[in-house]
Amino acid sequence: MSGHDAPTTPGPRRLRADGVRDLVSETDVRASDLVAPVFVDATTEERQPIPSMPGHERVPVAEAVPRVREILETGVEAVMLFGIPESKDAEGSRADVTDGVVQRAARAITAETDAYVIADCCLCEYTDHGHCGLLEDAAAEDPGLTVRNEATVERYRSIAVSQAAAGADMIAPSGMMDGQVAAIRDALDDAGHGDVPIMAYAAKYESAFYGPFRDAANGAPAFGDRRHYQMDPANAREARREVARDAAEGADVLLVKPALPYLDVVADIRREFDHPVAAYNVSGEYAMLHAAADRGWLDLEAVAHESLLSIKRAGADLVATYFAEDLADRL
Ligand code: PBG
Image (cartoon, rainbow, N blue to C red; front, side, top):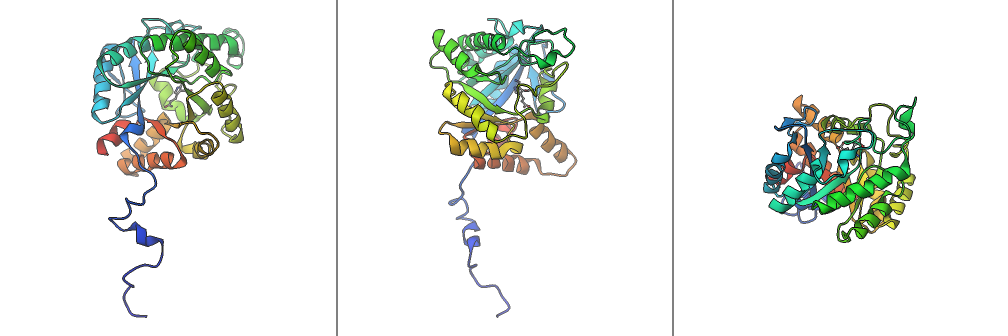
């Protein structure tokens, strides 16, 4: 053997050279695939930073349009609205009112910008107990074990219709009640919103990665947990059954949440169904990369991009992520 390398390598490295690597790349992250979550808060007059989600804020209704304009400037075209109401009660009565926080924000955003507005449809931000539905008896010894499915779904119908009436372009039910997609589809159709699609949180796991979000939205359950309605992280096959039901009930987009710890589920749903697949890169996934980057342990831009690429590679068509603006800005 001579003392120098052969001019060409004999294997897969041939296609990794500059000039060709991009030609053969299978996946990319585009601004048009990203959805930016926005927290609108009726209890504040000023933007409030969210400590566990650096760069994100709860914004007052008056700031909803300016906030969305900032997002649009980066090239991201879709936002997902979460609301913190002025008051909470056992029924979440502020969730489906015309002058509710999300309804007001959606009306302003759709009137004044071209953003595509997705409304989170759930009760946990609106109930004083923080559960995603109505409880059998909030005063009971262990009330967290008895979220009432049918009564909750009735509330979701009304929330979805009020959001669509306020201009929301898409409804995203995230409460994991059985039958919620069919009920919401029916309610939207009945109310003349047959053109409004549903992005179903079809496989939503009972995950500890939601921690920072629950701080941001003041939505942590006051007692108990969500394991009797959200999915068990141990289960992947069950996700197919959940997703099949939502698809049969009329879901237009199938969402898996969280994203990174559940890429096997994203990939499986991609293979099994023809629908667009969405993934939610949740607050904890964002917070942990930021925390490590703050310590100088990770390069934030690089790991954020790699994370999003992985979610796309697993088969997601669209991704809700707190990195949306930062990534889009760089693309
Ligand atoms: C509530 C909802 C949650 C998230 C989105 N919608 C939280 C939960 O179930 O506690 C979490 C999002 C995130 O962590 O980024 N229905």
